[in-house]
Image 1 (cartoon, rainbow, N blue to C red):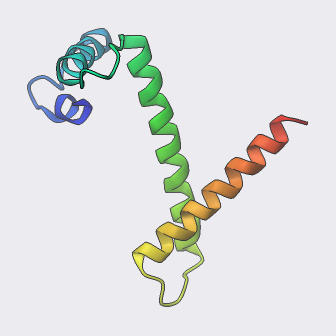
Image 2: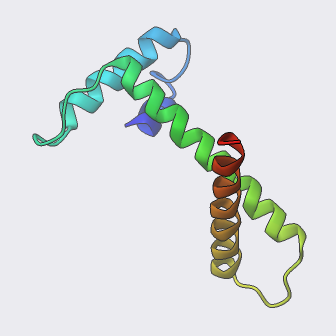
Length: 99
């Protein structure tokens, strides 16, 4: 739904952030499964921020692995190494925050 709204040339442009997130909220709640709870704009924005942050971190790890120029590595190998790196960095971040 998020991509549908952002990529629609008519809806996606020239609207305020509040209008955008209101539309995301409406579409999400309209299409949610019955066993999922209703989410408000704040909840959806927070979740999207979390997803975006993690996607950027994974992308950074992929770039680091690619910069190592691993000989003969497939895209799957690179992604697997990037996931391992992301996991290690997450563990390190958690350890450092507890000091």
